[in-house]
Every structure is written in C-alpha cells, then in structure tokens.
Length: 127
Image (tube, rainbow, N blue to C red):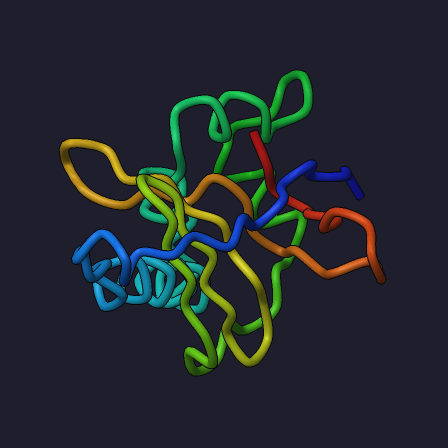
C-alpha cells in the first residue's frame, strides 16, 4: 500500500457565496467503480488523472492489468462528498476516492483509500 499525503482542508465556501457541485465528483467516483465492477479496467484507467495512470502499473504492466491485480472492492453508495476548489473527496460505502477537476471533468487521483487514525490516507491507487 502506498501512503497518500492528502489533507482535507476545511474551507468556508458559504462565506464566499460559492456552493460547490457535489453531484459531479460523486458521479465520477460511481462511474469509476461501475467500470471496475463490470471488469472494464481500461475504462476505469481512462477516468484516472494522467499522473495516477502513469504511476499505477508496475514495470511491464498496463494500467488495466494493475487495476485488475489490485482487485479494488465494490464502491457501494456515496456516503459523503467534500469539495474544496478543484479537489474532492468522495466516500463510498466500500471506498474513499480523491478526485481533481480538469476542463473535461472530474478524474480519480486516488482510490482504495483508508484513513489511518490522525495520519494521511493510505491508498492502493494514487498519483
């Protein structure tokens, strides 16, 4: 397992008058896990950030092979979404994902993440 150094800042978006879009990152996380559940690892790889997709496979492996080998469990339903600027955390019943918003939409930056007490999350897939 890799350690992802992501700290989720508490932003007071209400003070700025901006309401973050919670649905789009949640839908992206659900699509990612739906692709994995359907054994469409190539489609799931297309939903990763470029850096995450490049860092995922071991030498001689494709991104899809690496995802298949990791065997990330089912995501389940969305339980919480936090958005801060261009980044988001989506908690599913069976996984926590971190995403980043690009011009073409939300992409998965990290998946298979579990909290480690007061430390950063440990993630199976990360950039």
